[in-house]
Length: 566
Image (cartoon, rainbow, N blue to C red; front, side, top):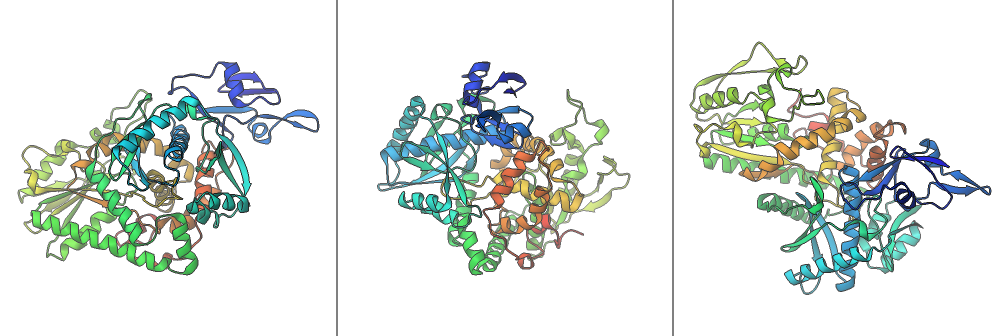
Protein backbone atom coordinates (compact mmCIF):
# COMPACT_ATOMS: atom_id res chain seq x y z
CA UNK A 1 0.00 0.00 0.00
CA UNK A 2 1.39 3.42 -0.96
CA UNK A 3 1.72 5.86 1.92
CA UNK A 4 3.54 9.14 2.49
CA UNK A 5 5.75 9.79 5.54
CA UNK A 6 6.95 13.38 5.70
CA UNK A 7 6.32 13.63 1.96
CA UNK A 8 8.41 10.51 1.20
CA UNK A 9 6.44 7.91 -0.76
CA UNK A 10 6.74 4.36 0.60
CA UNK A 11 5.20 1.00 -0.16
CA UNK A 12 3.97 -0.37 3.19
CA UNK A 13 3.49 -4.12 3.55
CA UNK A 14 1.28 -5.84 6.07
CA UNK A 15 3.26 -6.13 9.31
CA UNK A 16 5.50 -3.11 8.64
CA UNK A 17 5.51 -0.79 11.64
CA UNK A 18 6.14 2.91 11.30
CA UNK A 19 9.53 2.31 12.89
CA UNK A 20 10.36 -0.27 10.21
CA UNK A 21 9.26 2.09 7.47
CA UNK A 22 11.36 4.93 8.89
CA UNK A 23 14.43 2.73 8.69
CA UNK A 24 13.63 1.81 5.08
CA UNK A 25 13.17 5.46 4.19
CA UNK A 26 16.38 6.56 5.92
CA UNK A 27 14.46 8.82 8.29
CA UNK A 28 15.99 7.43 11.48
CA UNK A 29 18.48 9.91 12.89
CA UNK A 30 20.54 9.82 16.12
CA UNK A 31 20.40 13.62 16.29
CA UNK A 32 17.67 14.24 18.90
CA UNK A 33 16.59 17.39 17.09
CA UNK A 34 15.73 15.23 14.07
CA UNK A 35 14.88 11.82 15.51
CA UNK A 36 11.20 10.84 15.06
CA UNK A 37 9.49 10.08 18.38
CA UNK A 38 5.89 9.46 17.27
CA UNK A 39 3.63 10.16 14.30
CA UNK A 40 0.50 12.12 13.55
CA UNK A 41 -2.10 10.60 11.25
CA UNK A 42 -5.04 12.88 10.63
CA UNK A 43 -6.07 14.19 14.02
CA UNK A 44 -4.49 11.42 16.09
CA UNK A 45 -1.04 10.70 17.52
CA UNK A 46 0.39 7.17 17.18
CA UNK A 47 3.36 5.33 18.64
CA UNK A 48 6.00 4.20 16.13
CA UNK A 49 5.06 0.55 16.81
CA UNK A 50 1.84 1.26 14.92
CA UNK A 51 1.43 -0.67 11.66
CA UNK A 52 -0.48 1.34 9.03
CA UNK A 53 -1.49 -1.72 6.97
CA UNK A 54 -3.46 -4.74 8.27
CA UNK A 55 -5.17 -7.82 6.87
CA UNK A 56 -8.89 -7.43 6.18
CA UNK A 57 -10.90 -10.27 4.63
CA UNK A 58 -7.62 -11.98 3.72
CA UNK A 59 -6.29 -8.89 1.91
CA UNK A 60 -3.95 -6.09 3.00
CA UNK A 61 -5.76 -2.82 3.64
CA UNK A 62 -4.95 0.54 5.15
CA UNK A 63 -6.04 1.04 8.71
CA UNK A 64 -8.98 3.41 9.01
CA UNK A 65 -6.96 6.33 10.41
CA UNK A 66 -4.44 6.07 7.56
CA UNK A 67 -7.15 5.74 4.94
CA UNK A 68 -9.04 8.78 6.28
CA UNK A 69 -5.79 10.77 6.17
CA UNK A 70 -5.25 9.80 2.54
CA UNK A 71 -2.15 7.78 3.46
CA UNK A 72 -0.37 10.90 4.73
CA UNK A 73 1.68 10.52 7.91
CA UNK A 74 3.64 13.30 9.66
CA UNK A 75 6.50 12.62 12.06
CA UNK A 76 6.73 14.22 15.50
CA UNK A 77 10.14 15.32 16.75
CA UNK A 78 11.41 16.92 19.93
CA UNK A 79 11.43 20.57 18.77
CA UNK A 80 7.61 20.52 18.56
CA UNK A 81 5.33 20.87 21.60
CA UNK A 82 3.90 17.41 20.94
CA UNK A 83 7.40 15.96 20.58
CA UNK A 84 8.45 17.40 23.94
CA UNK A 85 5.40 15.83 25.59
CA UNK A 86 6.20 12.42 24.04
CA UNK A 87 9.79 12.68 25.28
CA UNK A 88 8.74 13.76 28.77
CA UNK A 89 6.39 10.77 29.15
CA UNK A 90 9.06 8.37 27.92
CA UNK A 91 11.69 9.81 30.25
CA UNK A 92 9.31 9.57 33.20
CA UNK A 93 8.68 5.90 32.39
CA UNK A 94 12.46 5.37 32.37
CA UNK A 95 12.65 7.03 35.78
CA UNK A 96 9.83 4.86 37.16
CA UNK A 97 11.68 1.73 36.02
CA UNK A 98 14.86 2.96 37.74
CA UNK A 99 12.98 3.69 40.98
CA UNK A 100 11.34 0.24 40.93
CA UNK A 101 14.73 -1.44 40.62
CA UNK A 102 16.17 0.26 43.71
CA UNK A 103 13.24 1.51 45.84
CA UNK A 104 10.40 -0.88 45.08
CA UNK A 105 7.83 0.51 47.51
CA UNK A 106 8.65 4.19 46.98
CA UNK A 107 5.97 6.59 45.80
CA UNK A 108 6.99 8.90 42.97
CA UNK A 109 5.05 12.16 42.66
CA UNK A 110 5.66 14.50 39.72
CA UNK A 111 4.97 17.90 41.25
CA UNK A 112 5.44 20.72 38.75
CA UNK A 113 7.53 22.06 35.88
CA UNK A 114 10.56 24.25 36.37
CA UNK A 115 12.29 25.88 33.40
CA UNK A 116 13.68 22.99 31.38
CA UNK A 117 12.70 20.27 33.82
CA UNK A 118 10.33 18.72 36.36
CA UNK A 119 10.41 18.85 40.13
CA UNK A 120 9.75 15.36 41.51
CA UNK A 121 9.44 14.01 45.05
CA UNK A 122 10.07 10.38 46.02
CA UNK A 123 8.43 9.29 49.25
CA UNK A 124 10.46 6.53 50.86
CA UNK A 125 12.15 5.51 54.09
CA UNK A 126 14.82 6.69 54.63
CA UNK A 127 14.16 10.01 52.81
CA UNK A 128 15.70 10.74 49.43
CA UNK A 129 19.40 11.63 49.63
CA UNK A 130 22.00 12.98 47.22
CA UNK A 131 23.44 9.46 46.96
CA UNK A 132 19.98 8.14 46.01
CA UNK A 133 19.67 10.72 43.23
CA UNK A 134 23.11 9.76 41.88
CA UNK A 135 22.10 6.10 41.99
CA UNK A 136 18.88 6.81 40.07
CA UNK A 137 20.76 8.85 37.47
CA UNK A 138 23.10 5.92 36.78
CA UNK A 139 20.19 3.48 36.67
CA UNK A 140 18.26 5.66 34.21
CA UNK A 141 21.33 5.66 31.95
CA UNK A 142 21.37 1.85 32.09
CA UNK A 143 17.66 1.62 31.26
CA UNK A 144 18.21 3.92 28.27
CA UNK A 145 21.27 1.95 27.10
CA UNK A 146 19.27 -1.31 27.26
CA UNK A 147 16.77 0.19 24.78
CA UNK A 148 13.86 -1.72 26.31
CA UNK A 149 10.67 -1.86 24.20
CA UNK A 150 7.62 -0.01 25.51
CA UNK A 151 4.48 -1.85 24.49
CA UNK A 152 1.00 -0.41 24.58
CA UNK A 153 -1.96 -2.51 25.70
CA UNK A 154 -5.69 -1.85 26.04
CA UNK A 155 -7.38 -3.11 29.21
CA UNK A 156 -10.94 -3.02 30.40
CA UNK A 157 -11.51 -0.54 33.22
CA UNK A 158 -12.13 -3.42 35.64
CA UNK A 159 -8.86 -5.12 34.67
CA UNK A 160 -6.92 -1.85 34.87
CA UNK A 161 -8.33 -1.04 38.32
CA UNK A 162 -7.45 -4.55 39.52
CA UNK A 163 -3.90 -4.39 38.13
CA UNK A 164 -3.11 -0.94 39.52
CA UNK A 165 -4.69 -1.86 42.84
CA UNK A 166 -2.53 -4.97 43.12
CA UNK A 167 0.52 -2.82 42.32
CA UNK A 168 -0.31 -0.29 45.02
CA UNK A 169 -0.95 2.59 42.55
CA UNK A 170 -4.14 3.68 44.32
CA UNK A 171 -3.98 7.16 42.78
CA UNK A 172 -4.71 5.57 39.38
CA UNK A 173 -7.46 3.39 40.85
CA UNK A 174 -9.23 6.53 42.12
CA UNK A 175 -8.81 8.26 38.74
CA UNK A 176 -10.15 5.25 36.84
CA UNK A 177 -13.26 5.10 38.99
CA UNK A 178 -14.31 8.32 37.27
CA UNK A 179 -13.37 7.31 33.72
CA UNK A 180 -16.32 7.49 31.34
CA UNK A 181 -15.09 4.88 28.86
CA UNK A 182 -14.97 1.10 29.20
CA UNK A 183 -11.28 0.76 28.28
CA UNK A 184 -7.93 2.14 29.35
CA UNK A 185 -4.60 2.20 27.48
CA UNK A 186 -1.43 1.43 29.41
CA UNK A 187 2.26 0.99 28.65
CA UNK A 188 4.28 -2.02 29.78
CA UNK A 189 7.91 -3.00 30.11
CA UNK A 190 8.58 -6.35 31.65
CA UNK A 191 6.57 -6.59 34.85
CA UNK A 192 6.00 -2.84 35.18
CA UNK A 193 2.81 -1.22 33.92
CA UNK A 194 2.08 2.49 34.01
CA UNK A 195 -0.14 5.08 32.41
CA UNK A 196 0.94 8.38 30.95
CA UNK A 197 -1.49 10.81 29.39
CA UNK A 198 -0.63 10.35 25.70
CA UNK A 199 1.74 8.45 23.46
CA UNK A 200 5.34 7.51 24.21
CA UNK A 201 8.38 6.65 22.13
CA UNK A 202 8.74 2.97 21.11
CA UNK A 203 11.59 2.15 23.53
CA UNK A 204 13.64 3.53 26.38
CA UNK A 205 16.59 4.23 24.06
CA UNK A 206 14.68 7.20 22.65
CA UNK A 207 15.29 9.21 25.86
CA UNK A 208 19.08 9.45 26.15
CA UNK A 209 19.28 13.15 27.07
CA UNK A 210 18.51 14.02 30.70
CA UNK A 211 20.00 15.00 34.01
CA UNK A 212 19.00 14.45 37.63
CA UNK A 213 20.02 16.73 40.46
CA UNK A 214 19.03 17.25 44.05
CA UNK A 215 16.53 19.94 45.05
CA UNK A 216 15.47 19.01 48.56
CA UNK A 217 13.18 17.49 49.56
CA UNK A 218 13.03 16.11 46.02
CA UNK A 219 14.98 16.30 42.80
CA UNK A 220 14.83 17.92 39.37
CA UNK A 221 14.63 15.87 36.18
CA UNK A 222 16.15 18.03 33.45
CA UNK A 223 14.88 17.35 29.93
CA UNK A 224 16.59 18.23 26.62
CA UNK A 225 17.39 21.87 25.94
CA UNK A 226 14.71 23.36 23.63
CA UNK A 227 17.49 24.99 21.58
CA UNK A 228 19.48 21.77 21.18
CA UNK A 229 17.87 18.48 22.14
CA UNK A 230 21.24 16.72 22.19
CA UNK A 231 22.10 18.24 25.57
CA UNK A 232 20.07 18.52 28.78
CA UNK A 233 18.71 21.91 29.71
CA UNK A 234 20.76 23.76 32.30
CA UNK A 235 19.08 24.06 35.68
CA UNK A 236 18.61 27.65 36.80
CA UNK A 237 17.70 27.95 40.45
CA UNK A 238 14.54 30.05 40.87
CA UNK A 239 13.93 30.21 44.63
CA UNK A 240 10.91 32.50 44.48
CA UNK A 241 9.27 30.55 41.67
CA UNK A 242 9.83 27.27 43.51
CA UNK A 243 8.56 28.77 46.76
CA UNK A 244 5.24 29.88 45.27
CA UNK A 245 4.74 26.40 43.81
CA UNK A 246 5.50 24.88 47.21
CA UNK A 247 3.03 27.26 48.86
CA UNK A 248 0.34 26.38 46.31
CA UNK A 249 1.08 22.70 46.83
CA UNK A 250 0.53 23.24 50.55
CA UNK A 251 -2.78 25.00 49.82
CA UNK A 252 -3.86 21.97 47.78
CA UNK A 253 -3.04 19.67 50.68
CA UNK A 254 -4.90 21.89 53.15
CA UNK A 255 -7.94 21.85 50.86
CA UNK A 256 -7.59 18.08 50.25
CA UNK A 257 -7.41 18.67 46.50
CA UNK A 258 -4.15 17.25 45.09
CA UNK A 259 -5.60 15.30 42.15
CA UNK A 260 -8.52 15.21 39.74
CA UNK A 261 -10.04 12.38 41.79
CA UNK A 262 -10.05 14.69 44.83
CA UNK A 263 -12.00 17.41 43.05
CA UNK A 264 -14.37 14.83 41.51
CA UNK A 265 -15.05 13.49 45.01
CA UNK A 266 -15.99 17.02 46.06
CA UNK A 267 -18.34 17.40 43.11
CA UNK A 268 -19.92 14.04 43.91
CA UNK A 269 -20.38 14.69 47.63
CA UNK A 270 -21.43 18.35 47.31
CA UNK A 271 -18.33 19.88 48.96
CA UNK A 272 -17.21 21.65 45.78
CA UNK A 273 -18.97 24.88 46.77
CA UNK A 274 -17.01 25.00 50.01
CA UNK A 275 -13.81 24.57 47.99
CA UNK A 276 -14.75 27.61 45.88
CA UNK A 277 -15.33 29.76 48.95
CA UNK A 278 -12.13 28.72 50.74
CA UNK A 279 -9.99 28.98 47.58
CA UNK A 280 -11.29 32.50 46.92
CA UNK A 281 -10.65 33.43 50.58
CA UNK A 282 -7.03 32.29 50.23
CA UNK A 283 -6.66 34.55 47.19
CA UNK A 284 -8.15 37.50 49.06
CA UNK A 285 -5.82 36.93 52.00
CA UNK A 286 -2.80 36.92 49.68
CA UNK A 287 -3.82 40.18 48.00
CA UNK A 288 -4.21 41.71 51.47
CA UNK A 289 -0.73 40.56 52.51
CA UNK A 290 0.70 41.99 49.29
CA UNK A 291 -0.95 45.35 49.99
CA UNK A 292 0.61 45.30 53.48
CA UNK A 293 4.08 44.95 51.96
CA UNK A 294 3.49 47.73 49.40
CA UNK A 295 2.36 50.15 52.11
CA UNK A 296 5.27 49.23 54.37
CA UNK A 297 7.68 49.84 51.46
CA UNK A 298 5.97 53.19 50.77
CA UNK A 299 6.19 52.24 47.11
CA UNK A 300 5.12 54.89 44.61
CA UNK A 301 4.51 52.40 41.81
CA UNK A 302 3.63 48.71 41.54
CA UNK A 303 4.82 47.01 38.34
CA UNK A 304 2.75 43.89 37.69
CA UNK A 305 3.66 41.33 35.01
CA UNK A 306 2.77 37.81 34.03
CA UNK A 307 2.20 35.58 31.01
CA UNK A 308 -0.94 35.47 28.87
CA UNK A 309 -4.19 34.65 30.70
CA UNK A 310 -2.60 34.83 34.12
CA UNK A 311 -5.21 37.28 35.41
CA UNK A 312 -3.09 40.44 35.49
CA UNK A 313 -5.98 42.86 35.03
CA UNK A 314 -8.16 41.36 37.76
CA UNK A 315 -5.12 41.10 40.06
CA UNK A 316 -4.36 44.80 39.53
CA UNK A 317 -7.95 45.75 40.38
CA UNK A 318 -8.11 43.53 43.45
CA UNK A 319 -4.82 44.94 44.69
CA UNK A 320 -6.28 48.43 44.24
CA UNK A 321 -9.22 47.42 46.43
CA UNK A 322 -6.91 46.19 49.18
CA UNK A 323 -4.84 49.38 49.05
CA UNK A 324 -7.99 51.45 49.50
CA UNK A 325 -8.39 49.76 52.89
CA UNK A 326 -5.24 51.68 53.86
CA UNK A 327 -6.71 54.97 52.70
CA UNK A 328 -4.83 54.91 49.40
CA UNK A 329 -6.32 55.94 46.06
CA UNK A 330 -4.42 53.85 43.49
CA UNK A 331 -4.12 54.92 39.86
CA UNK A 332 -4.33 52.13 37.29
CA UNK A 333 -2.18 52.23 34.15
CA UNK A 334 -1.73 49.64 31.41
CA UNK A 335 1.44 49.14 29.42
CA UNK A 336 -0.80 48.24 26.46
CA UNK A 337 -1.45 51.97 26.02
CA UNK A 338 2.25 52.47 25.27
CA UNK A 339 2.24 50.33 22.14
CA UNK A 340 3.68 52.16 19.16
CA UNK A 341 1.63 52.25 15.96
CA UNK A 342 1.50 48.88 14.24
CA UNK A 343 2.71 50.47 11.01
CA UNK A 344 5.91 51.58 12.77
CA UNK A 345 6.87 48.16 14.11
CA UNK A 346 9.58 46.50 11.95
CA UNK A 347 8.52 43.26 10.28
CA UNK A 348 10.51 40.04 10.44
CA UNK A 349 11.69 37.95 7.48
CA UNK A 350 8.19 36.43 7.22
CA UNK A 351 6.58 39.85 6.96
CA UNK A 352 5.07 39.65 10.45
CA UNK A 353 5.31 41.95 13.45
CA UNK A 354 6.18 40.68 16.91
CA UNK A 355 3.74 42.25 19.36
CA UNK A 356 5.36 40.37 22.25
CA UNK A 357 8.72 42.15 21.76
CA UNK A 358 9.50 44.91 24.23
CA UNK A 359 10.41 47.19 21.32
CA UNK A 360 6.72 47.20 20.39
CA UNK A 361 6.35 49.61 23.34
CA UNK A 362 7.25 53.30 23.42
CA UNK A 363 9.79 52.80 26.21
CA UNK A 364 11.08 56.39 26.19
CA UNK A 365 7.57 57.82 26.56
CA UNK A 366 6.79 55.43 29.41
CA UNK A 367 9.99 56.28 31.28
CA UNK A 368 9.31 60.00 30.99
CA UNK A 369 5.71 59.65 32.17
CA UNK A 370 6.70 57.43 35.12
CA UNK A 371 9.37 59.88 36.24
CA UNK A 372 6.84 62.73 36.15
CA UNK A 373 4.20 60.78 38.07
CA UNK A 374 6.59 59.56 40.78
CA UNK A 375 7.77 63.17 41.22
CA UNK A 376 4.14 64.19 41.81
CA UNK A 377 3.78 66.02 38.52
CA UNK A 378 1.12 65.46 35.89
CA UNK A 379 1.59 63.40 32.74
CA UNK A 380 -0.45 62.94 29.59
CA UNK A 381 -1.00 59.18 29.39
CA UNK A 382 -1.58 57.88 25.84
CA UNK A 383 -4.41 55.58 24.83
CA UNK A 384 -3.91 52.85 22.24
CA UNK A 385 -6.75 52.16 19.83
CA UNK A 386 -6.59 48.42 19.17
CA UNK A 387 -9.17 48.56 16.39
CA UNK A 388 -7.01 50.97 14.41
CA UNK A 389 -3.72 49.51 15.60
CA UNK A 390 -2.51 53.01 16.40
CA UNK A 391 -2.32 55.50 19.24
CA UNK A 392 -5.54 57.50 19.71
CA UNK A 393 -5.38 61.27 19.32
CA UNK A 394 -6.64 61.91 22.83
CA UNK A 395 -5.06 60.66 26.05
CA UNK A 396 -5.77 61.36 29.71
CA UNK A 397 -4.06 63.67 32.15
CA UNK A 398 -2.93 61.90 35.31
CA UNK A 399 -1.33 63.15 38.50
CA UNK A 400 -0.44 60.80 41.37
CA UNK A 401 -0.24 62.31 44.83
CA UNK A 402 1.54 60.83 47.87
CA UNK A 403 -1.43 58.56 48.67
CA UNK A 404 -2.06 57.59 45.05
CA UNK A 405 0.28 54.69 44.19
CA UNK A 406 0.49 53.71 40.55
CA UNK A 407 -0.55 50.17 39.62
CA UNK A 408 0.97 49.39 36.21
CA UNK A 409 0.22 46.05 34.54
CA UNK A 410 1.51 44.47 31.36
CA UNK A 411 3.56 41.53 30.14
CA UNK A 412 6.81 43.55 30.31
CA UNK A 413 6.21 44.94 33.78
CA UNK A 414 9.29 43.29 35.31
CA UNK A 415 11.69 44.14 32.50
CA UNK A 416 14.39 46.47 33.89
CA UNK A 417 14.53 48.26 30.53
CA UNK A 418 11.30 50.05 31.45
CA UNK A 419 12.84 51.85 34.42
CA UNK A 420 15.21 54.75 33.84
CA UNK A 421 18.22 55.27 36.17
CA UNK A 422 16.43 58.33 37.59
CA UNK A 423 13.79 56.19 39.32
CA UNK A 424 14.78 55.01 42.83
CA UNK A 425 14.57 51.22 43.06
CA UNK A 426 12.89 51.30 46.47
CA UNK A 427 10.03 53.35 45.04
CA UNK A 428 9.01 50.40 42.84
CA UNK A 429 7.33 47.20 44.04
CA UNK A 430 7.35 44.40 41.45
CA UNK A 431 4.70 41.67 41.32
CA UNK A 432 4.71 38.53 39.18
CA UNK A 433 1.37 36.78 38.64
CA UNK A 434 0.76 33.48 36.88
CA UNK A 435 -1.61 30.52 37.00
CA UNK A 436 0.68 27.84 38.45
CA UNK A 437 -1.34 24.64 38.52
CA UNK A 438 -0.34 22.13 41.19
CA UNK A 439 -3.22 19.67 40.85
CA UNK A 440 -2.35 16.46 38.96
CA UNK A 441 -4.32 13.81 37.12
CA UNK A 442 -2.51 11.29 39.32
CA UNK A 443 0.94 10.88 40.87
CA UNK A 444 2.75 10.62 37.53
CA UNK A 445 0.64 12.84 35.26
CA UNK A 446 0.87 16.54 35.98
CA UNK A 447 -1.50 19.13 34.54
CA UNK A 448 0.76 21.59 32.69
CA UNK A 449 0.38 25.19 33.80
CA UNK A 450 0.53 26.42 30.21
CA UNK A 451 -2.44 24.25 29.23
CA UNK A 452 -4.66 25.68 31.96
CA UNK A 453 -3.74 29.18 30.79
CA UNK A 454 -4.52 28.14 27.23
CA UNK A 455 -7.99 26.94 28.31
CA UNK A 456 -8.57 30.31 29.97
CA UNK A 457 -7.44 32.09 26.81
CA UNK A 458 -9.71 30.02 24.54
CA UNK A 459 -12.75 30.83 26.67
CA UNK A 460 -11.92 34.53 26.97
CA UNK A 461 -11.12 34.97 23.29
CA UNK A 462 -14.50 33.49 22.41
CA UNK A 463 -16.51 35.29 25.10
CA UNK A 464 -14.99 38.76 24.63
CA UNK A 465 -13.60 38.80 21.08
CA UNK A 466 -15.72 36.24 19.24
CA UNK A 467 -12.56 34.33 18.27
CA UNK A 468 -12.81 30.61 17.57
CA UNK A 469 -10.68 27.85 19.07
CA UNK A 470 -8.51 27.51 15.97
CA UNK A 471 -7.57 31.19 15.95
CA UNK A 472 -6.44 31.02 19.57
CA UNK A 473 -4.49 27.80 19.01
CA UNK A 474 -2.85 29.34 15.94
CA UNK A 475 -1.64 32.33 17.99
CA UNK A 476 -0.61 30.34 21.06
CA UNK A 477 2.90 29.22 19.91
CA UNK A 478 3.82 32.83 19.19
CA UNK A 479 2.46 33.90 22.58
CA UNK A 480 4.49 31.16 24.29
CA UNK A 481 7.63 32.17 22.40
CA UNK A 482 7.18 35.74 23.62
CA UNK A 483 6.74 34.56 27.20
CA UNK A 484 9.96 32.57 27.06
CA UNK A 485 11.85 35.58 25.70
CA UNK A 486 10.31 38.50 27.57
CA UNK A 487 8.55 37.35 30.74
CA UNK A 488 10.02 34.21 32.32
CA UNK A 489 13.65 35.48 32.34
CA UNK A 490 12.61 38.34 34.67
CA UNK A 491 10.27 36.54 37.06
CA UNK A 492 12.89 36.32 39.81
CA UNK A 493 13.11 40.15 39.74
CA UNK A 494 9.72 40.26 41.49
CA UNK A 495 9.28 41.37 45.10
CA UNK A 496 6.15 39.22 45.33
CA UNK A 497 4.77 36.22 43.47
CA UNK A 498 1.06 35.49 43.26
CA UNK A 499 -0.42 32.25 41.96
CA UNK A 500 -3.76 33.03 40.28
CA UNK A 501 -4.67 29.38 39.68
CA UNK A 502 -7.89 28.18 41.30
CA UNK A 503 -8.20 24.51 42.17
CA UNK A 504 -11.85 24.42 41.14
CA UNK A 505 -11.52 26.26 37.82
CA UNK A 506 -11.34 23.21 35.48
CA UNK A 507 -14.86 22.10 36.42
CA UNK A 508 -16.15 25.61 35.66
CA UNK A 509 -14.16 26.17 32.46
CA UNK A 510 -15.28 22.77 31.14
CA UNK A 511 -18.87 23.97 30.69
CA UNK A 512 -17.67 26.93 28.61
CA UNK A 513 -14.98 25.28 26.54
CA UNK A 514 -16.36 21.83 25.78
CA UNK A 515 -18.85 22.97 23.10
CA UNK A 516 -16.14 25.10 21.49
CA UNK A 517 -13.71 22.18 21.29
CA UNK A 518 -16.35 19.81 19.96
CA UNK A 519 -17.11 22.20 17.10
CA UNK A 520 -13.59 21.75 15.63
CA UNK A 521 -13.78 19.36 12.68
CA UNK A 522 -11.47 16.40 12.02
CA UNK A 523 -9.98 18.13 8.97
CA UNK A 524 -8.61 20.96 11.12
CA UNK A 525 -4.82 21.08 11.59
CA UNK A 526 -5.57 21.60 15.31
CA UNK A 527 -7.77 18.55 15.67
CA UNK A 528 -5.11 16.43 17.43
CA UNK A 529 -4.55 19.20 19.97
CA UNK A 530 -8.30 19.59 20.48
CA UNK A 531 -8.75 15.83 20.98
CA UNK A 532 -6.01 15.96 23.62
CA UNK A 533 -7.86 18.72 25.49
CA UNK A 534 -11.22 16.94 25.23
CA UNK A 535 -9.72 13.73 26.64
CA UNK A 536 -8.18 15.72 29.48
CA UNK A 537 -11.44 17.51 30.36
CA UNK A 538 -13.35 14.23 30.27
CA UNK A 539 -11.60 13.25 33.49
CA UNK A 540 -13.46 16.02 35.35
CA UNK A 541 -17.05 15.67 36.50
CA UNK A 542 -19.49 18.39 35.47
CA UNK A 543 -20.31 20.86 38.24
CA UNK A 544 -23.00 23.53 38.08
CA UNK A 545 -21.42 25.98 40.52
CA UNK A 546 -20.93 29.14 38.50
CA UNK A 547 -23.31 31.02 40.79
CA UNK A 548 -20.78 30.44 43.58
CA UNK A 549 -17.95 32.22 41.73
CA UNK A 550 -17.74 35.80 43.09
CA UNK A 551 -17.71 38.75 40.66
CA UNK A 552 -14.21 39.72 41.85
CA UNK A 553 -12.76 36.25 41.11
CA UNK A 554 -9.83 35.85 38.74
CA UNK A 555 -11.98 33.33 36.87
CA UNK A 556 -14.56 36.01 36.04
CA UNK A 557 -11.97 37.68 33.80
CA UNK A 558 -12.36 34.70 31.47
CA UNK A 559 -15.93 33.40 31.83
CA UNK A 560 -17.61 36.81 32.15
CA UNK A 561 -19.48 38.54 34.96
CA UNK A 562 -16.46 40.34 36.40
CA UNK A 563 -17.01 43.34 38.64
CA UNK A 564 -14.00 44.99 37.00
CA UNK A 565 -15.05 44.77 33.34
CA UNK A 566 -17.95 46.45 31.59
